[in-house]
Image (cartoon, rainbow, N blue to C red; front, side, top):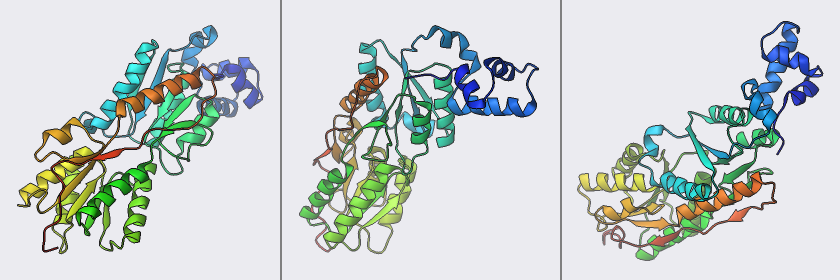
Length: 340
């Protein structure tokens, strides 16, 4: 992939390479308007003058980048990303590549990081996680021609390749299992609204419950943290017609929900069944152990890393559907109370 150069800026601005150099280095010789236009173009294409030596050498960074738009305090306790990164690292280290990780506050900050990394030659490619509906990052990466691998989908990735799992099918398996146990009042504590996989899960849950005639099914949005997952659980269990089963969009919220249920004097699974998404060691350490939707997340990360390195090498890479999460029943699920 072609990295941005002074010549690219000069061509877009309609000036000489010398004028670009003057403008970027704060030297006289160009008007204020021209300087502003040149700086704006440099920022848009991700060029950084401090990386001039590396640009001239044409050296590869031998590193790829991953930005996470999540509170840093939550990442250390969320097994999904730790397992994903372990799979990515295993593949990268075998190829003598490093992973550059940065936590950001919002999508705009994430885009700024992509521009800086590419302009400064810090990475040869990037992973894109937590795909959003109408994601602003996708067209920016396409314009930068920054090699990228989207972890998520399907669709909404423009010309960028992606690896994805069928979250809709996994959700259907979990809900049908609860219905087979006899549950009719089923709730879901969802993840962050606006994320594509959250929307896919919400749509699948709503459509399936409508088909099955589960008129009292409801989704409560949350943010994947134990605090918010616990609050959502308390609201659901305090309602006049409390659910007899709750499906959580991650393991951390499910464990918090289990604690809240027990604090409120409810027995799991006699009074309430709980299902977690993304099975982890945490799900098996609590009592009762949590029924969970699970898949090989390190393998998912390794697959994404292999495909990103192929993109970096200029090889053709197609979209790829990875394995669907499947349900492992454990002690947290059972038939609903007889009086429901």
